[in-house]
Amino acid sequence: SDPQLWNSWHVQQWIEWAVLEYGLRGVDATRFIHLDGRQLCRLSRDELCRLVAPYEADVLFTHLSYLRQ
Picture (tube, rainbow, N blue to C red):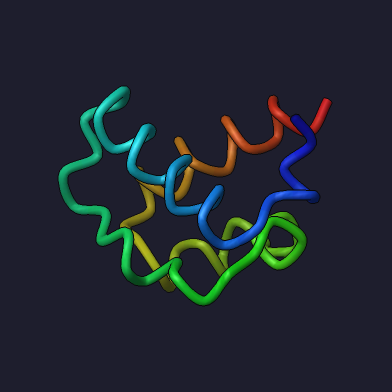
């Protein structure tokens, strides 16, 4: 489904999945609890780096970009 249509629960599910799938142990899913899909998709890579470490931001940003295609 289009990530821009996700509600905050969907965002949490995606973050929790990505943590397990990609071994992103440093990601705190609660930092994303206030975001819905539209807000998540508007985040730049630099803005993601404020929520998670740069490597984790790259993984999340890349996967989110893939989902949006």
